[in-house]
Image 1 (cartoon, rainbow over the protein chains, first blue to last red):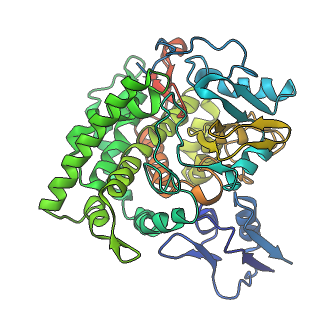
Image 2: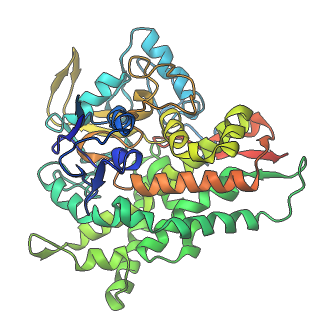
Length: 64
Length: 410
């Protein structure tokens, strides 16, 4: 599983970083980015789905 | 004057919510979710009013989203619907960046993002917690089953105002004055424009004096930061600094105060949710999002840039468009069990902090204050109830929350 953020859709709501800090981080401007290449380690799939389901801007997607 | 007995301003009581909508009618905020549901059920996805020189109100998630993203047809040059017609020009507006449009908006916003970014705001948690505990200590001796405290006026109202005053480097003892400014700018929206102007002048004079004091003696705070920071190689003009300070001072006060108050109002009325949060404090971050969804305090506004046909509605230049993000959050097309508070709701794309480029700059601070304020209130008072449901009074205007909230400690 991979997670991806569309940077131009992210408005810095910070939901992904709050819910899944193992997968997402934020820069000094509050802009989110995926950690590493976005590969979701085994056991964190639910957290990845939670981040997707809480992004108000629909900026996060998952590739299974 | 913020309670339901407040005068109804220039326009008088609303005659019909579909065609004579007025969010500043004192009967609106106490039952706003019912009004949105009634209008949607009656096949009215966009309400209208001739008040305020013309105002439109999209009520579905789909339409609120469309307006929020459409900065071409809808300008942010004024975001508080009022009788005043004198507004600063786009694209900067009177209180950048909230009143700014692209492309200037992104420049002005970028200056402010770092001090409000998640990791910088997280550093305030201990201070916010100490402040909450101090306010609870200040309530004095509490006798379970007897003592009644006003969770709005004695608790919620004091937390955000104190934090933002410290961030700006303003005297925290001026907090009563800051709440008066909030009332003048955000609540007295349907007074005669001349009366409104007096309130704005008082606010500007106060901020000018604070700016002068910071020029004379720079400090480590947001006011000094704004005086020193450069935008495209230039220091900010005085009007920009002052407008941004107006925004920072006022935007975070009654909004977060309302969110804290609404959360306590809900928990006073729902023993099951309150006891679950006491038993499972780890649920708090999820619960806070659900309380924000159900009781989102902030309705924004835009102005129609040029005449525009909006799904068959003939919007005219300079008419207002109210952006009720709280109605977005209650749309059953967007959320399962939209009218219920589901305290452990896991899928929650609520728009309490807006959508698109104007996402609330202070959202990380607001979330911190709301979570810590509720945590500390519950830690001190795990059992409480409304002392008198009829004594609860709601705000008037675009910010929705309880202004009087007497709760009895059990």
